[in-house]
Image (cartoon, rainbow, N blue to C red; front, side, top):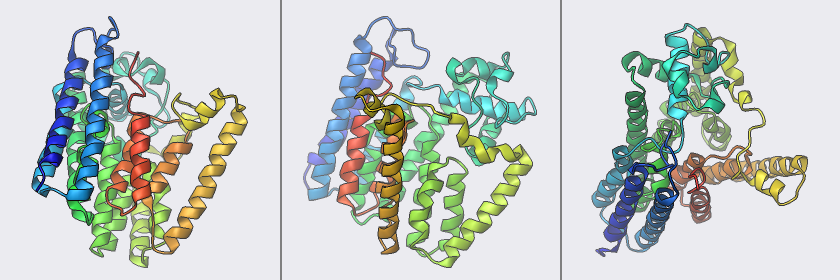
Length: 393
């Protein structure tokens, strides 16, 4: 067996560790709440992260051609996904929003889907939330909000809260790596596709984003479906939608090719979950995503088109049209037995006006388990595009 895959995996880990060390230096603007005293740390962080990504892609090329021992690939994946835990919280205050929404329910007997953190200005979680998001109510699923409530009941300190969410996300990324290897035919390649990805490591162990929980539940559902355990698969997929909405948008691509048992499990789980969520939070959770309104991010493709001179309505209309046409084409292929979930995730990411770096984890995780070369290349391209999206320079 060639030593090149292991060498490239180690190179990815070393470059990622260098990026985390740069983020941890005094005066680095990369960590959440960091005070910028120059761009040197940010430049090193970006350069090292780019080197890590280049080593990761090179490792995938070698693994696709030559293969490697699965245990070695998984061991390196675990190391890569845990490395950011040794550094500070990176790039986003989202974990504090999770905490604040949980506290609104657990400490203030309120509803995070109607009451924003700003309603409780003296709460420590509100003070930790990024100022721009203190007026925003929860956009997350009721299952994740219930989890956030449970985390708050066991932990009070903001630093510990952040570490809890980051650790949970890192463990979910590792579990997703193992599930990808379990599902895919090229097991070592699939494990590396997920577990060696430095963007996932920075987003999950570094940022604690709940996308990791959604993805591991979706991959768990696919693993169960591959063993014809359709009832459990349908229930698990619906649990993923109760964490974050993209799982629901991708569900039709899976539904059109599975049997009535999967359908039935989705319906029963959705009904039971809806009743439980309504009893806990009332009905406003059903419209949670609408709270994002017309938020835009500078790296989103529709926003890029606006900056190139296309009028705002035309840019958004073009994105919606691309989403609808692409969805119809993917549904047609799914009816023929090829769901192409990764391409569906790419379509969501490329047409949304609200694109954040960790959204690139959606197509990466799904492309790992599909024998779809086009989707894998596109997923890597999307990840490379957003790699440095929120780094201050």
